[in-house]
Image (cartoon, rainbow, N blue to C red):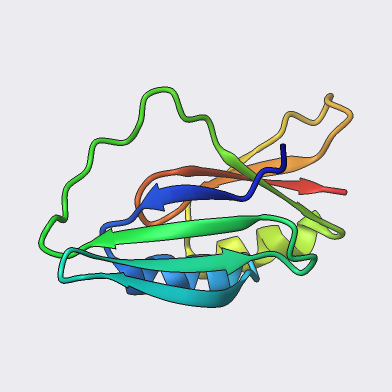
Length: 120
């Protein structure tokens, strides 16, 4: 089996797109209207191997964040540049402990989902 996409419900589509397109660097591949109920926006990474489906339900702005979902993870070549960007934006982040062999930070997307950014 091949993993096709990960779906996440979002409260504010524009803020989520700004985060995933502007900060993470994904690109929008397509949109699909589900009548008057919802809009699906598909995003993919530079390799096009996996998509995130942002689902914005019209008229429903409050969701309970799933208690079994962990986080999304993205790899970058230069974590210090990402940290500088996060600090410039004034966002909260949590950095890996210095004694660990891997370097990463955690930030939260506009809906409160954890996003890990690892130096690769």
